[in-house]
Image 1 (cartoon, rainbow, N blue to C red):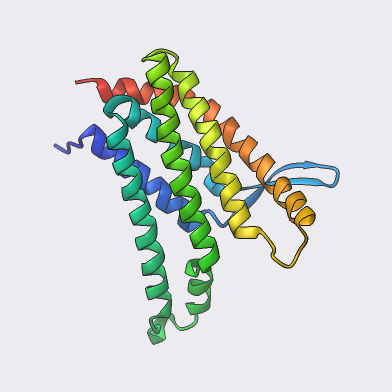
Image 2 (spheres, rainbow, N blue to C red):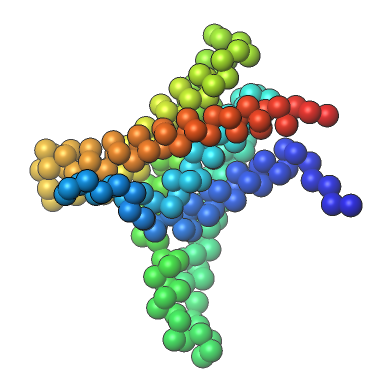
Length: 215
């Protein structure tokens, strides 16, 4: 009979969500349209809050050190993915796949700037999430899990979003005011969308903690 340890499953899901976000997150879809205002979201919006929720579940049950170890593992996996993508794209294709090579390169070629922005933002956001969650638990104890998880997620997701958007899309040939206005238009709605997803996923955190603690 197939048997999977609960923690192993959560860690696997955590890494899978990170990898899928990296591979498929470049696609955006229309979310809101009001007059001349368009709000588009990356398909990764469905996975990023889940990553933070899993982080909180593991921190709640196993503590800070375990959660930080898993975050570090996630960073290594992203770095491995980027290195292998570069290696795979630069290998010459066989004749059978010659026609699809351009599509393959388009999908898997990631600019160094976007890659660095993603790694940096993820590292800061995830470690900050663990730090805030642990500090809140020290003050509040085991009560108000909904408050602890949402405060830590909302703050860390803001830094994640702001750092990524700034590093990825800041235009050095544009004045500061122009950059600020453009980046603000990207950061605010996307962060609020992440916050909304985090809030509606709060019951998953409770279910995950209860499930992980069961014998």
